[in-house]
Amino acid sequence: MSNYKLIAIDMDGTLLKTDKTISQKTAEAIAKAVASGKYVALSTGRSVDELRDYEKEIAGIPYYVLENGSLVYDAINKKSLHTDSLTLEQAHQVFDMSQTEDVMLYYDSFGKTVVDADKMPIIDKYGMEAYKDVYERYHTLVSDVPSYYYAHAGSLEKVIFFCATPEIRAKLYEQMKDYPVAFAFTEEKSLEISPCGVNKATGLGHLCDILGIDLSECIAVGDAGNDLAMLKAVGLPIAMGNSTDEVLALCDVVVADNDHDGVAEAIEKYLL
Image 1 (spheres, rainbow, N blue to C red):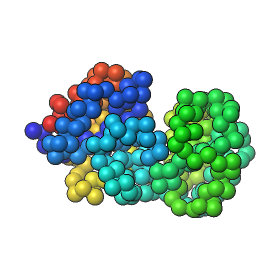
Image 2 (image 1 turned 180 degrees about the vertical axis):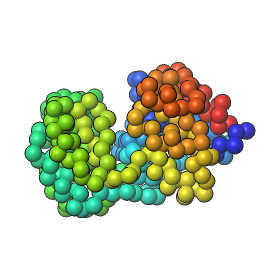
Image 3 (image 1 turned 120 degrees about the horizontal axis):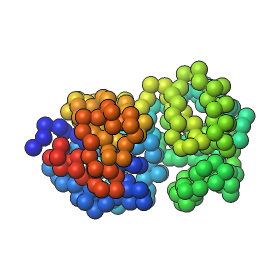
């Protein structure tokens, strides 16, 4: 059996196939790893709310590193283990800036996602039409997102501006780039804002501290830019066959793509 104790698995483009499903072979490999005493963790930009369509398929995975590292979550006991949050001052800065341009506003707090209800009828304008059904079924839709946050307070792990045009995103980033926060470009026109210094590597590090293991004892599997920090931090970084060139260049191992059970291959060859 491998000496690695944990495997952290990205979701979109890695665990999920192109059609956003999880293959039976991959699900079986994950179950086998958990049964053997290995730790398995999801590591994704998604919130708890955004995992609800996969509750049955991922039921055996005990830990989640969510929102690109801002939230570490115990999926068995359904509780937060660690959160990193924007400060109230940063929240004011970010939310105030969102009002200056044509954006659809979104934030995560303790795994709960709040979305701008007024933009839902024209969500295609912001490039998020593929997620409309998920937003309507699982997220909290409110007309005034900043006011809702201030009324409920709590952790603010991630804010996203879904911009009407790439030019708006570029303009907002230029105006905000010196803020003490972290930025990520995920969707074509989105600007993602998180606490400074937080990424999938820091989130996985917090989980390792909780479990009493070292990052060098971990495997990570990913495909895209928001996986790079995590891949650099672990003992064995594994790239999916469909990965970006930057991820492929970094990783020691390349497995099959997400439509051909690359995650199952990583588990069977390198974790078990």
